[in-house]
Amino acid sequence: MNRILITLGAAVCVISSAASAGQGLQQNINFMARMPDAKLNLAATMAGNVIGAMQRCRALRPTEDGKAIIAVPSLLWDGVDKHLTPNPPKFKRAIRAYEAAYYKAVRRRDDCQTEKAKYPWLYR
Image 1 (tube, helix red, strand yellow):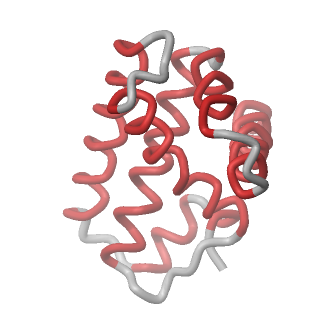
Image 2 (tube, one colour; image 1 turned 45 degrees about the horizontal axis):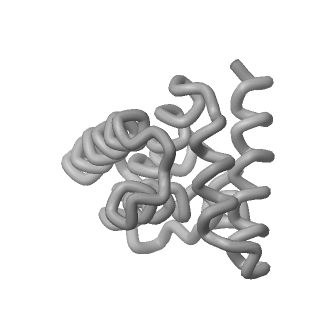
């Protein structure tokens, strides 16, 4: 499991750095389209948890990895909305995973320290 998370973190960092360097939206979407469904859904779920927790706990600030995770839903929606993805159903499933995780995270009653403990490398 740790290996998957490290790989996912590295993949998301690549997505983020490529996006911030202006390498092109299409390259980032193609990269995500080549990811296995499980890994893409995991990234979307992590993004939902991070964004939902940050919505609820204003004291949480993302690290560079957290900022990369936050970019995932934008790439998913751009891929579907702008018809840039070669596999729209895959992206729609990942969007549903993101939205479900987001709504659960916003409604969760855990305190901010518990949220930070779930993904310690994503928050300062």
